[in-house]
Length: 157
Image (cartoon, helix red, strand yellow):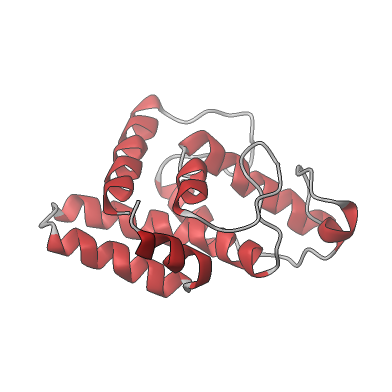
């Protein structure tokens, strides 16, 4: 990972991070197919991770506290199963008015403010994820395609 990526994830806005990824895709002359996937994916996941970063409430897919947003944490959440779990965790937290499914201390979880799931929900819906029932699986082809998107993003960081 490039040092600039760490600084960008530590302090950058959603727009700044997505712009860097899209610009890097253009520099590498990647197929527009990947640009069409990387931008909404990155926007969706960052729309959740950046507000959590700003409130010092980051956690990994296992629910353990993480102190800063890094490219590695972003990539951990980029796993399609983890991403689906994140969406349901945030939805349940929004409904409860406190952060759920983490090992963060209770006083931190109580400070949770409702997050907008629109960007992440839109991305997951386009990729055949049922947003009503967490137990329902998604097509394996969707998972495989998403792994390709994650690999492209990893190569950009």
